[in-house]
Length: 114
Length: 110
Image (cartoon, rainbow over all chains, first blue to last red; front, top):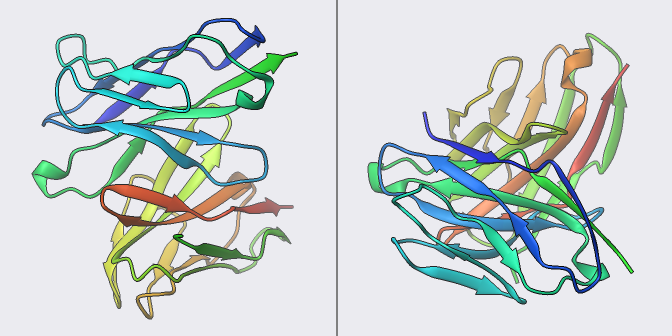
């Protein structure tokens, strides 16, 4: 079945550091890729999505580019702030096959120290 | 703004007891989902539904039942709660290929 792998379980950075969270996927079709963010005490919320190869998604200074060749959708931010501390989930949905399931990675907990 | 409300927000249950988690959405969305969140596993799909009176199994349905009596309501039922079902449970509804999550229910089975 479809799957999403996030390499980093936890990341600790100082403010203004550069962030990279790696996400690789495996899917039989042509999935839409997502990044969701979860703040303490809340449910996950959509950060952004990308639906086709080379498409860049972005929001709030975060960005990721859909790479079909390397099956990746890595999350990056040039300068993190303490308020970015949260759990980040990479996810996919392959609805072209009529499957309306969403598959999530294990999540990456980001802690930014002021 | 999409609204998904879960109740209760936290619950302590005894092993072997019955637990019902409730979810209500005011979004008029067709699809609703139940996910389980565990450290190291992320969010895993238990059950989902795309229409009232019909539910589908997700990736980890064993030990769980779901009920969708109306478009607005979607319940998750643990008939015989077990220690391994201690987790945070999230309900979500879907529109325009976006999931809208509730705030979660923290379930502890003792």
